[in-house]
Image 1 (cartoon, rainbow over the protein chains, first blue to last red):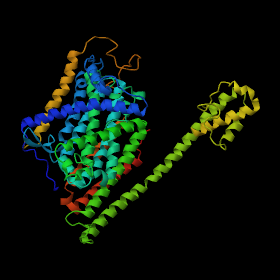
Image 2 (image 1 turned 90 degrees about the vertical axis):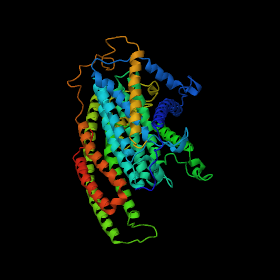
Image 3 (image 1 turned 180 degrees about the vertical axis):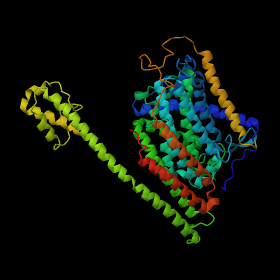
Image 4 (image 1 turned 180 degrees about the horizontal axis):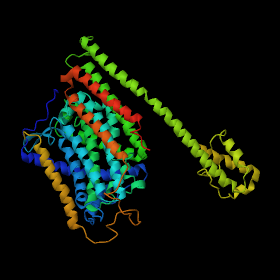
Length: 484
Length: 120
């Protein structure tokens, strides 16, 4: 058991609990309104625009106006929809999003209305498991909503979204194992308490990196926003939704961003604890009472800013790249991280600490442990080494198909060029293309001509003598093709 | 509040009230003007194609992902109690968990090599 006690809620009456619940709901709604404005303003800065700045000071009331507009819109139920599930889906989605913050600690114990109570609604020994469970339930909202719309785009968006969320949830849960391992608890207040000396983000850095990557995938945000890829799926699972039902999906997405940020703050960034240095001022004055809320919100919004930053910087993945990244990079990396930190913990702590600093160093336990661990790891490593066999086949196949494709395209190209007026220039030009460096701007600005594309005659080209111009244009096209 | 799950119920009640209330409010407030095109499935402006039987089809690959997910999710859920009770279980727990991880890793590698994780 961890040395840190679980937060004490024995003073809470039912009224205190209800007040806390209402405060959390209002906090979430206001945070979402703010987050939308925050994101639009920040992305606008990244794109050298000014963003919403008209309604209210700095445009702060823009998202409130949007919310009111959505509320006043017509509630359309599409003809092909499964009426009941179509109605329930957004409710499930937003309900699950609301529930997570019940176990997030906002601060240490304070006095509200004369009652000393922690700034947290509730906490129990499996709080983080509860968070993961309720987040996983939220997937139902998406998949049922997309399915019940009775339309093609929402269905595809929903299955994509589900596959994405469950894949990245695995990596996320694996990243959390290290935290449970080292803090010896799954209760949020105990995990915050265990980070008194150092934040887990520093000591468990690989787990933190894994968590941050998978939390972006988990919330369907760029660069992992494939379920809502506008160019492919219109709007994803909520294409057929309007009015408040759409608003709930939208709200749930933003609350989920807040949720994963809050979990990252609590589990990795010390929760409501003051940053280093500040916590030491004046006998830890800034580490008590209402100050906790300040640090918690500061860390939360830093992670939200990271979300927006990533969105403003990166491009959307292709779906196969995305799934490969999740299953072939993140999950193996998560497993390796867990094994590494478990072995490290086994060696450094426990009833018979083997690497206890200053204690006895070499015991029988140590040898047994090392044999077991090294044996297991060696076998796993040997199995992992079998992979290159597969990887070597792949590029060969891909190369062959690429060559085949190039040959086909080349054949088509030579067929089209042979129909034009310079049939003789084609083949020598293509041969030379392999030797000459690739010049992206040769033969056309801003893009080189596509294979088989004939550029319109340039007025300046008339000045150059024809025999010189013909081979100069042709290799560029060949080079462009090779690059492809 | 001695039972820590009562606040969860309070939160659930309020969240449900809010979620249903919002949908109900928009249904009451919003206008209702029937339009044949408006209630059609959206398909970029063209006549919507008749939906396939049983609310449409999607690639079987997604089922494969879901099945693999279940295996790994159970693995991870097994790891949670072990992680929390790591100190009590000590060496026995660590070696047992490494063995368990190994047993899960073998089919994972098998699925990987058989192309179960490839998207094309």
